[in-house]
Image 1 (cartoon, each protein chain N blue to C red):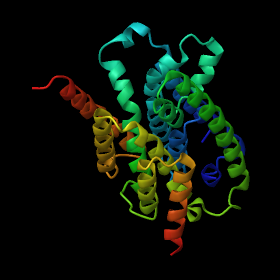
Image 2 (cartoon, chains in turn blue, red; image 1 turned 90 degrees about the vertical axis):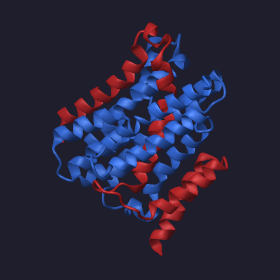
Image 3 (cartoon, rainbow over the protein chains, first blue to last red; image 1 turned 45 degrees about the vertical axis):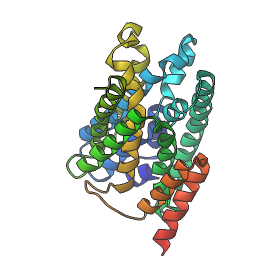
Image 4 (cartoon, helix red, strand yellow; image 1 turned 30 degrees about the horizontal axis):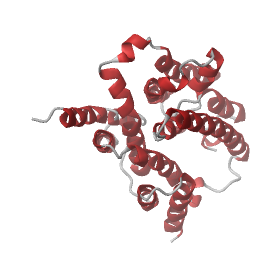
Length: 199
Length: 99
């Protein structure tokens, strides 16, 4: 729907969801274009936002070890916030793999069907805000992150990251505050070290 | 937005996903990188949550999303299922907007 509003056309909106498949990056790119921002800034910002998927991939490597190359390629495309979060919250590798694949494939299907429906409906459906859907995204991410925050280092990292991100919203262009939030891992590393070597 | 941009976005984002999987094992066996990787998921998700809750056009905007997300936080902490959390958050936000 957002893409239609920005004048992208159904084909491009669907292509973004099929090929990029990273919600935050897609929203960031479309959002900047919609508000008349430069295309270069939109593209760079959106790609940078997608860099966190690379870090998720590093975390998820053990899950896909020994799989045939084509399966790993599909796994790559499906590596995003939701699948990384759900997989990370599982107690063992078998369930983690199950979580990753079921969430990944389901989400890919829903995301693309939703994009098609949204793009076609364009201005016909009510504003997503009246349905409270703009709270749905953070709520979903919250559900995933709470499970990961039981350990102290993760908690410290997450809270610092959140604080850093919020503080930089007024200072930096769209998409960048989230990346700044990544610096919260440094706090988490500190907390982990503190737990291991007591003074 | 031209098709070239769509292609660039696709290539850039997929590139990052692939990179994480294709780095040599030796780089990741010990040291900083594995510990960083484990911490990065909760950190970035947390940042995403707050940014999606209070960001407007380069400013902090407190609106109906906040109570929705607050309710989500409570439910998530109480280990409610994902669907419940999302539906409750949307409902609360929609209600607050309607009032």
